Length: 337
Image (cartoon, rainbow, N blue to C red; front, side, top):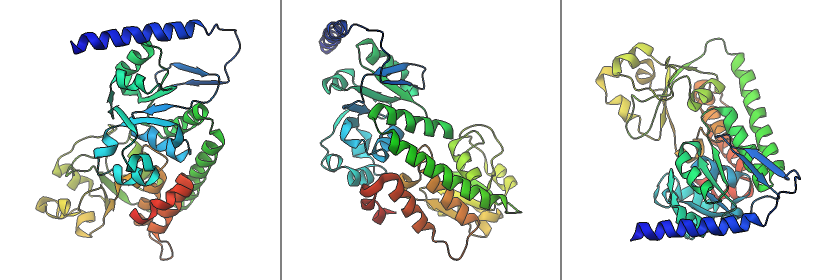
């Protein structure tokens, strides 16, 4: 019975959208806004969107950086039940704090009916959610898909979302800031004769799951002026203890875990980073998401851990980055850093 109702709902909506679209005869005029998404689809708009459903966390984060959060009418449910996301987004938006924003899906999935009931001007999805994107397009909903697996894609997503929301000036300001900071750090790193070798481990006890050379975290390591100990081209390869011992990194960067995960492993005792207690933690994870402009705070932290200077306060540097990226509302985040 539920399936029948769903089919009738979608069919009715298709008719509704078909009728609505039939009244908008193409006059041949170029649209004010044209954006190509990660899947190659063209989004054309007469004016910036006013109602956004976003089901992908890096894109949601970008909208808050762009000061476009008032346009958000739907998010994914994970925001409300994640200890790694809710405490921070709730400080950026009272609607999230009070759990008033609609949740028509999860981070990677969504209900077509629930999304359409929000009457969005656009739905933002990860490129991997192409089945959902196609289903929404088939009933007349505009969809923008994105991927942020390489750093230029992070910049492109920021510019695209700015075009869609009418916030290009803000996007230009933020991208220029991040590029300038990265260039400054690169200049300092280029003058360092002997580069540190760093090993990165993902969260939840996965100390043998690392970042390969074809990953956003590899970009952060290179931007920080350190060498990625992992020699594999994969995004997130899994290794064995013997491989880590052979790489013998000078430092270990952890993602939201305790250094004890390494210290308790006797077979790793001779690894330089462990023996010299050079293990550092990107915590809380929210401030160091490598798939957003916050990859700058990741790179800056790693750079200063690798090449410390007495007059540099790493925490203070991260605070300044967060304030720049989020503006006035970023002040509420500072006590959590």
